[in-house]
Image: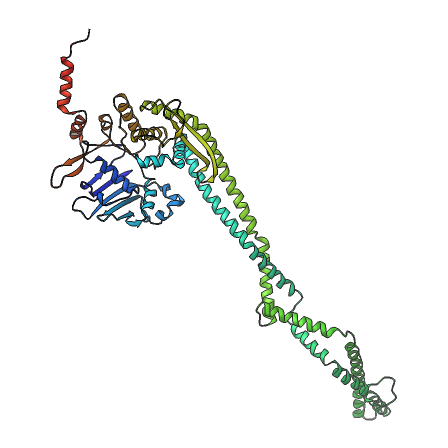
Amino acid sequence: MIRHLRLENLVLIREAELELSDGLVAITGETGAGKTIFAQALGLLLGAPGDQSLVGPDASEAYVEADLDLADELLHADELEPIRELQPAAESGVVIARRIFADGRSRSYVWGRAVPRAALGAFAERLIALSGQFEQRRLASSAHQLSLLDAFVGEAHLDRLAATAVAWRELRDAQRQRDAVAAASEELEARRAELEQLATATDALMPDTERSLAAERERLRRASDLAAAASEAVELLSPEGIEQHRAAELIAQAAKRLGEVEGIDPTLDTTRSELSSSEAIVREAASALRSFLASLHGDPMRLDAVESQLQDIADLKRRFGCSDLDELLERADSARAELDRLSRSRPLESAERALRQARSRYTELADALAAARAEAAPRFTAAVLEELKALGLGEGDLTVELGQRGAGPGGAETVAFHVRPNDGLPYVPVASNASGGELSRIALALRVVAHVRAGEPTIVFDEIDAGVGGTTAHAVARSLERLAQRAQVLAITHLPQVASVGQTHLRVEKVAGHPTHTRIDRLEEGDRAAEIERMLGGTAFLESVVSERRSRPARV
């Protein structure tokens, strides 16, 4: 609701500070007093264009400001995110304003921060529902019509609607997360393949593998030199099949000769023993050399194999940016650990499971919304027609047509209200071909039937009494009074029936002067009674009516 309204230099209103209450606020005054300026002020807050004609005489600018309550959930709508970002911490209400300069320029403000006029209008329309061109635009909106039907269904349905909006946001978040994970899956698979290649390529490697292979390569490259040296050494130590004295034979002969004098001199006995041992060592060395010679001729392709293995190791170090084999093996151990983590984590599967759960939750809630709307539509139609009949629009008809659209925060339905002013005429959209007064009464009927709850906008009716009098005037007053039990209602009216049921009464009065100006006063009980009396025609008029009735001859 609007808690406070401030007007400065707006047309004929120099300054007005208005404290507004909840319930029904009646705004009255003589024709031409300036009641329309009050509606213009609210229109500016709703984004209506401003020009220099709105700036009062001798003023440099006009200013309109409203301090309103703000329902917590109102700013959750995606389109209001730029406004939501301006909200001060711990601020429960909102201050919106328009400033019109003498050259026709204007500025729009929310919480004292400048915003585009369209952004202010879109936000303010969720806080203030003004009849006339704004109500026509509002009633033409399928979203607004759907909100009225939803309000009629009841509190539990509105709670489910809020839950559906939350489920919709969660579904979109889950879809975005799944898409992001899917887009990253190729990179993840490439990473996994790289890790697997590193782990597999290093499975058979040990810390000394490279050093061993390098030594073997050097030995294979010098094989001919090694063979010649070993062969000559064998020949010198202990040749086979050749009758010539060589090292082993000569040692054996020396040991044998000393054996002939064994036991005579200990020194020679020791020497003979050492020669015998040396013969064995020489023969073992010769045997080892023969084996070595045999190994050199075992695999003629071994050098190529060793060269290939060493090249593979060099390629791996270069590819993975490692300076030596030890660092490469450390990277391989890390790769195996990461592969183990990846094998236990399935991000795409998790994201798809979360998406299925979010879609199931949303579908369940959206289906419940659809069923409730379909069940309530006929009852809503009957209730609105009954209210329209009481408001003097009872010759027409109304249809509520539900359709389908893509899924959204409010479910998957659209709604269209169509009216037929008189029998035989075609149905037309509810906001078409209606006068200002008829449109206001249609809006009133819809609002009264819909079960408005906390957080609904302040509802402003202008011209609702156009062409209305007698019994219909009383019906309008009763409907406004019922509606005001659930929302703040501002009624700019000429009807004393409406003024008499208002919780708050504002009088707009033109004051003569240089220049003439308009003021708005909040009336207390005594002044209020006098204003209602004026609306009824004044004391002289009422006395004349009574006198005339008394002077009429009695009917026989």
